[in-house]
Amino acid sequence: MKADAPQKVPVTLATLQAMRQRGEKIACLTTYDAGFTRVLESAGVDAFIIGDSLGMVVMGHDSTVPVTMDDMLYHAANVARVGRSAWRVVDLPCRSYETPAQALANARRLVDEGGAHMVKLEGGTGKAAIVEHLVRHGIPVCGHIGLLPQSVEEYGGYKVQGRDAAGAAAILADAAALESAGAEMLVVECIPATLASRVTGSVDMPVIGIGAGPDCDGQVLVLYDMLGIVPEPHPRFVRDFLQDGGSIHAAVAAYVAAVKDGSYPADEHGY
Ligand code: KIV
Image 1 (cartoon, rainbow, N blue to C red):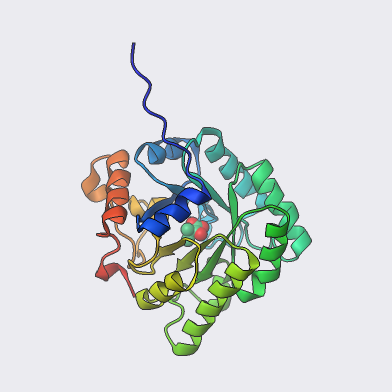
Image 2 (cartoon, rainbow, N blue to C red):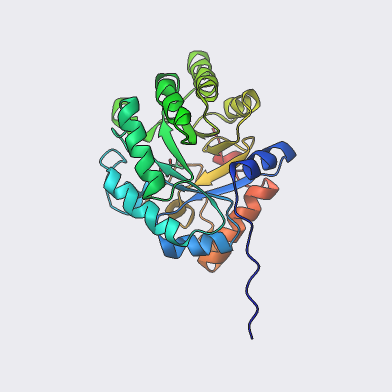
């Protein structure tokens, strides 16, 4: 009889915090469905973001702005149905957290119907009251600062944030405000590597970078980007792991290994 594969112990926030403490890098990827989720877990991914990037890579929208609660719930539930070990962070989509009451109602749906372990929302000091409200009602929150894709229409494109002193100070203040409000994890997107390093050193929660250099506690990429299955041009922080991987499982395992040994992201992936 074939022996069962050993079950990986489920990752919790305490696991991620302990990894940060001992300097073990956290390997995170986005996922949106059951098939990829099984492969990603078997290749050793620690944490998933069921990101609203699904609006672009799965649904074909030009941005994440049109993504709805129904879209997020559908994909989050697909992942939760088969997810066994990785920590699951699910995005609150654009316009779903404009008031504390609306944010709480929607976050509860992501947890109850979508199987989220934690919800993620974009914004810093301006969102601290919302974060505080969610945390007070028992919803774990991941912040997201730096480049905020849900605000891309206001930026006029996907641009690196925090390049000047005022921008950097605002991002450091955002991180502090989110932590004071009770956020327990933070994504920093498209900021200079030196600033990401300062943000990581300034808070106690695990910080996951995307386009933010090597000194965060972990890394995340959009799954379809790291498999090279989205149209060019790709942001400079993206590395196609499938090119040399041979299979999706091998590509993801190579990503996990590269994050853990610090070879991804390299200098050429940073700002
Ligand atoms: O939606 C998404 O994929 C994200 C990534 C930046 C992790 O938020």
